[in-house]
Image (tube, rainbow, N blue to C red):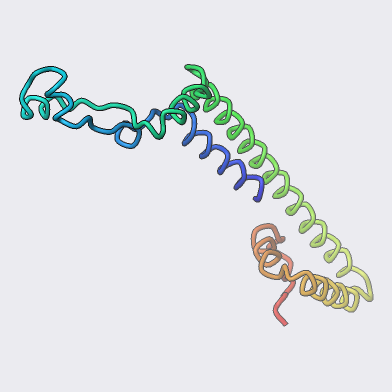
Length: 168
């Protein structure tokens, strides 16, 4: 889960910081109208209508630095495609692991049910079954997995066999 969160953060960072365009409002400042009017020989109203802007002098080195490390065209879509593919492969892998875990859980529960059925056929089977049930309950309580085991028993237990009651 931790790796998935780190991957999500990395994808967001890549999305947010690659291929970003410079926001003109923060990197440029309007040229005073009187400078434009004097240079071009026009009125202040005409200069205002032109809306000429220039780079802010204090961040000119920053603009050069940002444009120097800008990714090559097409890098962001390619990186996005690669990372989406990696996420898809990860999702398929997790789905396969879940299916495998479900099969193992079903097999283990059915094995325990079968063992209990065999015990019922022996002379001392009821005593051994009771002791087995107590031991399983103790181990599950120690591991604090009662809820998960109850869900698994509801899904996979043999319907003809009285289920193990985990509630004490």
